[in-house]
Amino acid sequence: MKSGLTAKEFACDEQLLIPEWLMLKDGPVRDYGVIISNGKFKDVALAASLKDRYPAVPTRELGRTLLMPGFVDTHHHVTQSFGKSLVFGEPSEIFRRVWVPLEGRLTAEHLYLASKLSALESLRGGFTTVCDAGTRAGGTLSAVTSAMSDVGIRCVVGLICNDLGGSASTPSIAEIQQRAEAHIVQWQSDRLIKPSLAISIPEAASDRMLKWVSDMCKESGCVFQTHANEHLASVERSIEQRRRRPIEHLYHIGALGPQALLAHATLVTPEEIAMLRDTGSAVSYNPVASAWKGNAVAPAHLMATLGVRVGLGTDGTRSDGFRLLDYAEAAQRFAFGIGTGDSSCGAGWSWLERSNRNGAQVLGIDSMTGDIAVGKDADFLLVDLDVPEMTPSWDLTWELVRIANRDQIMAVFVAGKMRLLDGWPVDWDAKALMAEAAEVAKTVVAKAPITKLHGTSSESRAVHRHSGKPKAA
Image (cartoon, rainbow, N blue to C red; front, side, top):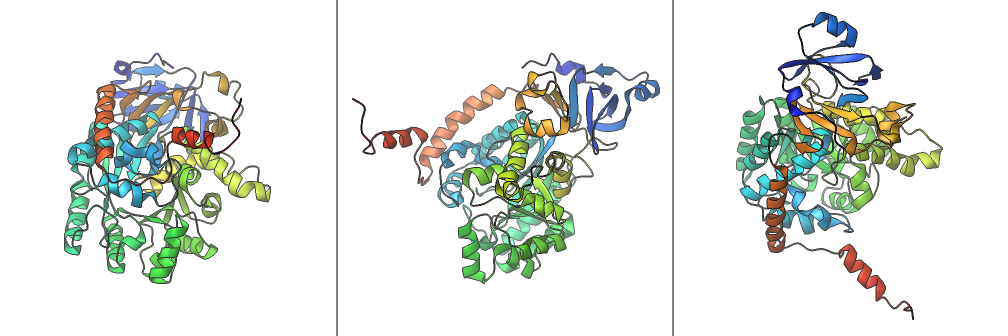
């Protein structure tokens, strides 16, 4: 779908944009506009009022368009783009058989290409912010941060601090702590890149390290990331090793708190939900990951209702913001709503809110981004509403959750700068990146000691055809 827009039209330092609909904190409104100045929202008000107050500012009427906040992905693995479909059909804990072996083969050049490819995919799906859980590859994160900066996407970059394994290499505790402190100092004041510390799973770190990482994040205002209660195997392993479930253990050693962001949390007890709520901890709800490879669906709607902070994440599965919204609502309906007669499951608006404003709050960057508000960075999407799927329109917010598609995204802006137009970057060659990444990935995957337990779709079809069923004459 061609938007008819041009990058040159939006190259002004200050401009007034007037869409048909503007998505604000309390929902969509008509007849409003925004003044964008030096990458920030300078003013948000009725369009007529803005025209009167800013007569010299260039004005752009956007027709039947929605201007909405960009999506926030609260859980991603940006260096895994070379192998996404390798895990289709695989049972849980694929990090042991696929991701650690694959990431262990990534050089700095590979990390840059994989991260840049992920960033491109995220922008195409409407994400203006992604939170990377950290790569298990060795070396520094400079290749990852360079890729994010070059693409121009906002990124919370996790540094893995495991001291008991689960990565390509395991540095000493002193080295881990030194790297963590340097990572925070390096990126704490950057506009688009924000630091985070991560433990891949609680069992991959000693209690001393878990507590140190959590405390360091609390002191520095960063997010402490870890995967918790995702699979039955990890829950049972934690019980064997520590006599407690993962979230229980994090609570027991004092590693939970407003700085803690737990990915998945699908297998949670009522007591664990209370621990999350009482400590102010947050959860990244990853519904596509649950559908593709999980043991369960996180009770995200219940958590949020009880006071747990919840954002939405892709887990690196598929960077498509509108399809993520659809899955977020549908998974709650299938897992919980049908059995209780809840035909609403959040009434649409709650999932949209968790995809932007709540997501930014979960990542601790809500003072900078997450909604259309004066003083915040202008991270936003222009969405085409002039499509048959949304004609007529009776409930725009819920329609965005259930009906809207990625191909309706006309343009993506980060900090006021147009990054994508009609699905493609405006200032660099995405097709060249794709060609290079495809060739490099072949070599990397061929050399990585990956163990797959499920064949490809074509292999499965061949097995099915030769499984002893009667053949046609």
